[in-house]
Image 1 (cartoon, rainbow, N blue to C red):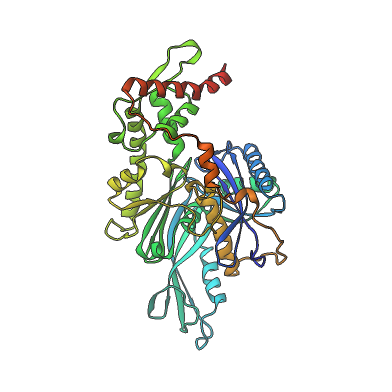
Image 2: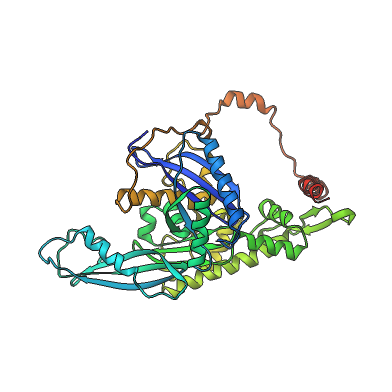
Length: 455
């Protein structure tokens, strides 16, 4: 365990969940997870904090769970993700004429060039969240990834500037502060997710990262090693759940459960003779819902989200021939069945699921490698990027904290597992009637608690 590195905490304030993860890089440069907590999110809609009190409670609950997983932790500062349809991006150009032409270009000059971009004109009510250099020029030399060490008269760069609504940013900062924490930095969620699921080859080949969250779908496009475009699409998993609720006339919790258990992003792949039975409300007759209809509703909304992705790619002139790395799907919504096939069909690009284990040390619990934690793990990586590039001040006294047992994968004794498993059962192909009865009984049990709570 490398005790020389700081412990960095990512806080992902999402529409459906709030996650807090504490991590530290080991001597091999891989991230070891030292604390993990999550809580259901209530005060956030479409990625924006609308109810501060409810959000504070959810942050405090996620923090409590994080401390429960490792009581040795001490959390003061957090890297926080930001999304929402108020996020916009623009391209700018900046140049400075150097005083000392003979000397090599230094980091301070690059910092000054970036700082100048924070004075770019943006509409009233907006605020600059981040300024990201794309490629630099020194005199007549162009497309320089890093100009430090070059010498010349004039140094300039193209910049990608990300802006957001001042009130939305204020609400996030206020929620974090009232939960007893300090925001170290606000990071655009698709950039955090990209850091967690991408490797250098992806960056070189050109990829579109599509992070399907609860309230928004975040997009980051990389080409020739440069961030070309970011966008926040105002639809996510919650919209699909609401579509199912309205389209099939069921409760929201039932809609969410059906989406996760029986949902598919391609109606052609759904069985036409399979039905889900939902118990009727307050003595009303039970409902039979076609699995094919359910898939049709999901496909309609997912196709719309992917159409937006295609539209954004065309906006920046990157069609299917240029992105050799294809689409990387991540976020909780990426786990829908047959989503890869739908994405490939709509966008014309190869697609795969991006798991955040690209930079994680081995031996962690499987839960942490789920796509829904990509943003949170990416926030820790962003913190390490700041630390390694000395972009921000970090406290020098690093405490000795070990990876807790609860976050380590426990070795399984296979002989014991086989003894406990009992005799191996061979599944018979069921007739349609027994198949439907199984469906029915499982779902009645599933939603019984829901009804009891309502009565």
